[in-house]
Image (tube, rainbow, N blue to C red; front, side, top):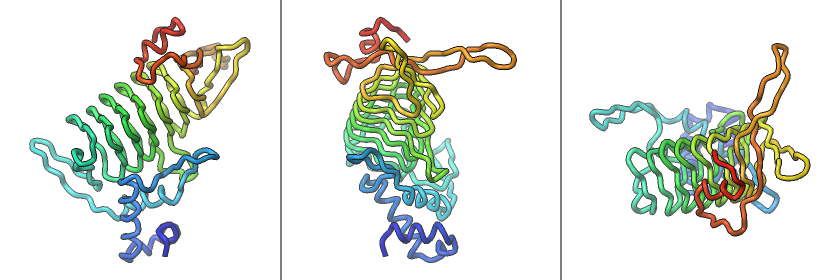
Length: 270
């Protein structure tokens, strides 16, 4: 029986988890995700496809794992999940205290500063996960991405239909920026420090004669800074956060440029 069929059957009937055939199938899926051979979301010619059954396997994996104590004196931890190991053989630089859970794929030449990468996520080659950045469960991070200090990438396991956060190749996310609720940041986009993106955040392109509004995605090569707009409430008019696209990344701007260099093209500092 195909792994996908076994996972779906166990999801519908949790009594099957008492059968080693099905619990072993769940563990086999997590191993495939850990090695990057299977993904929670996969890119294709028609965009990204979310594999709900993989998320089902991850959720059931929590159920079949036993709690255990981990001792690293003077520290003690109590959890169900193993951590990733063998970074040297993976070609990954992991700086103390970088933590990545087993079931997260970390590709070669990734640098993990003191940070956290959760189960189900995918971090592709050459990406920098900077100090205190968090890559939430099932998030998909592309090649050559820079997640600056304190960046928060939201996780998603439930509801099953919900899409994970996707950060495509070559993006640069400034310090303390937050991307959650399945927002997609397309290739080579730049987010300034403190940009916050949710599914309801208005992402407004102000680079032309008329504003153009997006929600849930940042177009490729956009340069984005925090903004606000006035909104009337019963108690009065107040400003609500939004994100402003102030232009496109210049062709002359190297992909490894600093955030300051990208913003300098538009005479903006954040």
